[in-house]
Image (tube, rainbow, N blue to C red; front, side):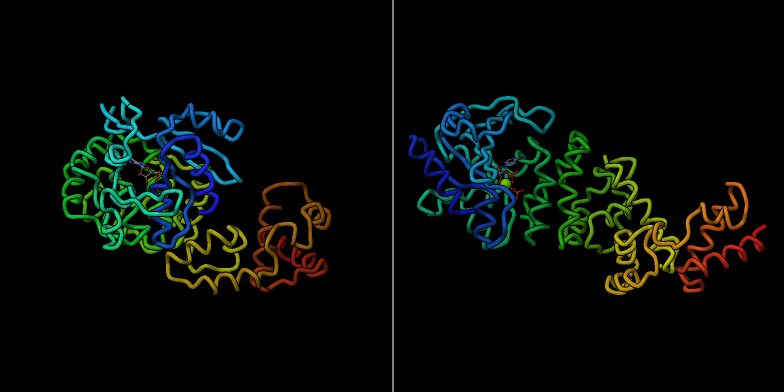
Length: 366
Ligand code: ATP
Ligand code: MG
């Protein structure tokens, strides 16, 4: 990825524009971590970038950035700029393209995100980001109070970087966040959730949660059940315990999953029927939340005699025929009885045994 990124910035440089790798990409590279995207800062304007990469630019212009797909990697190319007149404590109203890298660095959020690499792989560190990186510190560029109040998303980004990188938050930054936290109400739930998702899916999530508590953000983020949360390697497990389904925008899948996990948690012990009914994943998450080993659940799941309806060696039509009854609620009960019997190991999953069991169940239920 680095070599492709270097090729790309060299190409922009060859067209006469100062260009650097920057942001998360350089930060993660220096930390030996894998990066999700490549951030590039350049003196070329978006129009000039589009001319250089013609067919490779993805549609849409986001605040002076161009996304280029080059050798199958996404590059976020952003023109050096100054930002001012923030609207709603989130977006700059005014963007001015500039030619100075140093000025561009000053509009960025944290020093660890301002370290640059040039086409010769040399590090350019005008704001001492490397020192903070080595000290594992998240520090604001310039005045923290100003930074957090002009764009309140930076509060959640700060917590996210501390959590995912295992860094500490500077003392002045903590103070400034406490002062600006009331502005979080300006941030859309969608944006809040995107950052919280990243915090909750980090293996270091408990640190993120304790930072949220330390900064007293529970109320602003409407996370009233924060103290109920238990360590969980799955983000959905954390959201389940927080019980904010009606506040944050969850997909239908996420909502169904949280509902299932809650039902499983109420049903302890986690038995074969539960595994069959809900499937493996929600049971593993519920298991983790109540301290049951994942291996144990995986093993129980792989030992299930049946894992889906079609596995039962009898159909509803066959049951109706054997018992000579019309469709109705009794059929459902018999079907469930057979399924439970097979899962408990009381009935063999063979046509003969199921037929016999279905007659006995009918007599008991009738
Ligand atoms: P990652 O890509 O790992 O999520 P990142 O730091 O690269 O982290 P991006 O959203 O890709 O984050 O942004 C790229 C760079 O743009 C950042 O490193 C930072 O320098 C700058 N940046 C992004 N968002 C903001 C912001 N809200 N305020 C100031 N600077 C920002
Ligand atoms: Mg990035």
